[in-house]
Length: 137
Image (cartoon, rainbow, N blue to C red):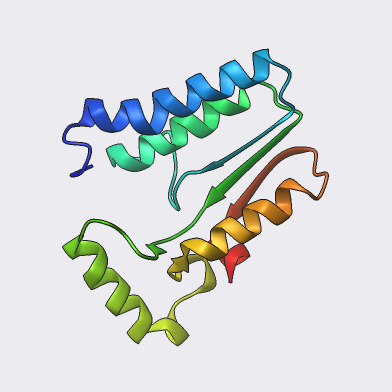
């Protein structure tokens, strides 16, 4: 949200862009769509971030892709061009207490997410599939 600058800008990037891409791809015959949303994505969330993520999931499902793959990682770890203090603190906390954290809440390396996405995209899955953080461990 901070990087986007406003709720409107965040919604444009995290809702409008994926929906536009998904609609255009579907119109051109795409049969599978994959998206990374977030742990806690929920259209009824009191948190704007999670609500927008839930809305995009819901509305992507309405496009009737034969295969829709949704990935909901917890905190994403990896190299970033910008520094985010809250995420750095969260990353240190997650690493320190990793053995005590339930699998769906553990921080996930972005490379692991990409690997799972590539693998699942090639498995011939049909229907809607949601992968929580534990799928990336």
